Image (cartoon, rainbow, N blue to C red; front, side):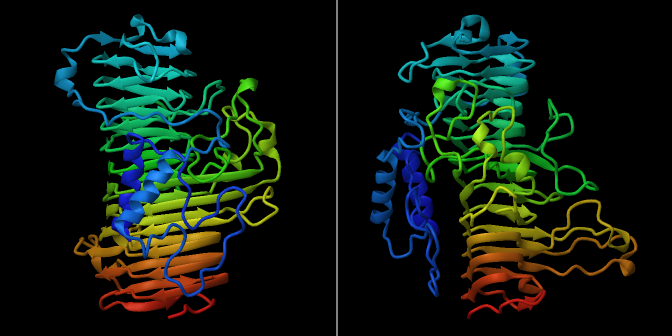
Length: 510
């Protein structure tokens, strides 16, 4: 499964020089298709490639690469950038680069030499190039349509790519604080394209991003890394914010092959959507009337792939998908001026967390398909958690078990999720034990390690198959299910108790 799925993603990116266009989700419906069906006793769910050989995966990727869906954004095919080449300048090398206190480009007329442009005319064949600068403060590019390459710069402040469309390629830069598509009044399309091979201290906001974010190194960060405040909050007030990446509103996005030194947030934003999964671009909700395409904003398709990333997080919560602030991220906003966003609507959401390694903490689904007064119908969702490696590190609970950081005792936690097909398959979960239990050892409770925990799942089908675990006390803890059918099969949890019923609910099929 993992080889087929990863091959599919790589072929997709290769077919358009690394950009994805028109991918139709296998097994999940597209615009106009019938409602999803129950897979019954089958192990596989949406997007599963069981039974296909590599040639099948290759044909599927090639077809997806060329099948651009103009119903999502007429005329906006993703550009075919080649993978960026170069090297990230070090702090020592930055001292010898030509220096600018800031770069501020508002609109295409701002692409001039005084703003660091060293070449190009703004076309895909000859994009504007901003290269080789030490920018001590902010580099801002906003409300543009032209093609631009930003490479081999040292940005000592904040790199802001606000509403630049899909023809943006940023690679081999050092960036203290990265912001993309901030919540401001805008005329431009959502920034997409490529952000790759950069060294970033902190991603303060990767918002409403429609492109490929890959092969970047993010963190470690310290309190001085943030150039501006992060508006999205962490789940609990009493712990230090360990995030190095705030990814919110990720429709059409592929986040692949990055290394994150700290916690990563994937926040759902329902007002950033398209027509169909992995359509070439998202619906436009900005201030320019002639850019509106007459889309039906009551039908909202959202899709993201988070694959082959490595998260090292010894104090935070690892990887978290979040839909807690649904209403605030689902209606009109400064950047989303379309009034019909306030109407009743239906979401279709596809999230794939595939082939990642999370070291030190776990993988956490913190609400999938939130309750909302604007949801009169079922919101179909597909959540795949597959072929990930999670290595928990036992943490010092402190005296009396009072943590000053996130507790890391669950490998994969899915809570408060509904109206979905959930597949948890092929994951490898481990515990690295041995942390000191605090100076009042005798008064500190012994932690209970659970490989998988499923809590408050409503109206869905759940498949937990083919996972392996080592060093845990419990394999699967589950409870508080309502209208759920689920299957537990083919797992190897070592010497752990296989199943713990946390509350009343249907027992799994075996």
